[in-house]
Amino acid sequence: MKLGVVRLLLILLMLGVFQRAHATPAELAHEAFKDKDFIKAGQYYEQAYNEENVEVYLENAITAYLNYSFDCLNEKDYSECIKYCEKVLLISSTDKNAKEILSDAYYSRSSKYFYRGFKRKSEQDILKSFRYSVLPEQKERAKNFLVKISGKKYSQNPVAKKVSNRSSAPELIEAMELKIYGETFEETSVIDRVGKLEKDVLGRSYSNYSLIERVDNLKKRILPELMGQKS
Image (cartoon, rainbow, N blue to C red):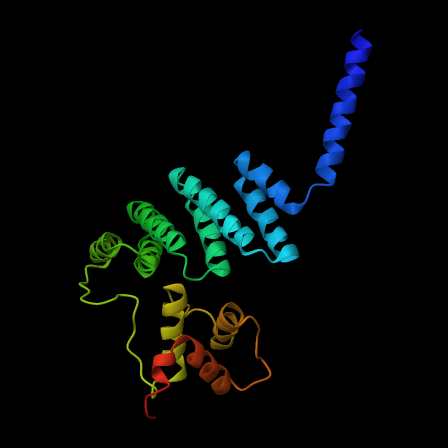
């Protein structure tokens, strides 16, 4: 009798493995989401979208990653939260839920840095919190904390930098970095900074072009408001 039960269990187990091996990415995604394995669910939904080009799968992937990010925020795992919110923005650059969570994550991490004495890191994160703010209270909170960190008062967007079409290449690079990342990378070479912007914004590097051409190409994409100005 016991041997028969064992055999039955083995058969059921093998049947389950066989069914799983032949499951579609969408089916695996649904199963992972039900088990609250949100990362795996998101990955399978992306795979399902790539194979079938069904828009709802991409929307489900975003939902899965946002669920995971929100859990990370509650657990104060800010780096992981930020990582997957940014992944969502790579899929959908206008997703307000991802930006709202990012703003909260950067604000919380900024506070942690500040009270541990890491003023520069704190200021970098609060600028990003402001940049990703969706709600008015998020913007106000970030501006107030920035005053506390730096002692400066900001009457406008602290991330913004006034530039014109006549600005030098370094000034344009700094303005573009602030707009894209919420911080600048002065300690890195100009070539490396331009290369990073190209890869993140344009998807590839244009190292065979002159630096002026590369900056101008980036300016057209990141600072289009300057293109109507006269030189």
